[in-house]
Image (tube, rainbow, N blue to C red; front, side, top):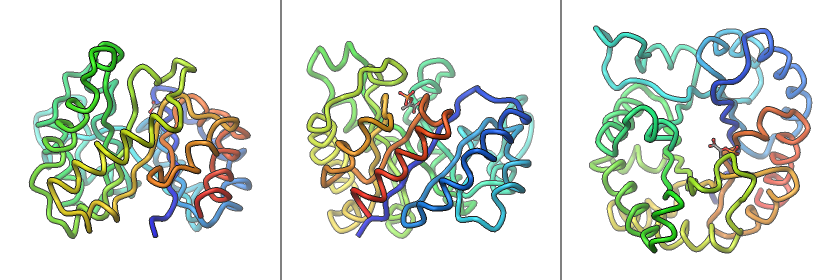
Length: 255
Ligand code: PEP
C-alpha cells in the first residue's frame, strides 16, 4: 500500500513573514489529515522559521532545488547538507528548473543520488511540453526522463522515491490533464519505465503524483485513479483552504 502524498510547491512566492502567516493558517487543517504525507516546499529563506513552526507535527518540509556537490565555489547554490538541516524532502528536476536554469536529466540524476546520500527524499518531476505532446512524443520524453534522471539507483533508495508526472502544458495554466490521461501516462510510462530500469516490485512501491492545475475541485478525480498516489500542487498550495481540501481529498479517496 502506497501512502498518499501531497506536496505544495510555493515556487518563488512568500517572504518569511508571509510564509509564517500562511503556515499558521494551514496548520490546523493539515494536522487533521493525518493519514497522508503532506509536505510544504517554500523558498529557502522561509525554511528555518517553518521548521520551527512545524516542529512536533508530521508536516514535512521540502526545498525546491539543491546542488549535488557537498560545498565549494558554487555561488548562489545550496548544498544537500544545508537542505537536510531543515527538510526531509527536495523537489528535483521541476520543469521550470529545466526550462530556465538549464537542468538536464544528467544533473537531475546527480542531484537524486546526492539527496539519497544525505537522507533526503527526492520528489522528481517529469513531463512533456505542449509541442512534444502534440507531436505524439509524450511517451518517449517521459520514458527518457525517468530512465536517465533515475539511472543507477540502489533499489533500497529507489523505493523511497516520489515521482511527479507534470505535463508542462498543465502547469499554472488552469488546464489540467484529464484524470484518465494522467493515469494512462503514469501507469504505462512512468511506472512502466521504473519497472524497466529497476523491477516491477520496486516500481510498485514508488509513489507517483500528478501535477498541473490541481485544485480542491478536481483533486478527487485524480486520486480515484489506481496509479495516482497524490499530487504536486503549485498555485493552489498558496491558498490554505484549497490546499487543505486537496489533502482531505487524498485522505478520503486514497487512504
Ligand atoms: C507545479 O509547479 O509543480 C504545479 C503543478 O503548478 P500548478 O499547480 O500551479 O499547475
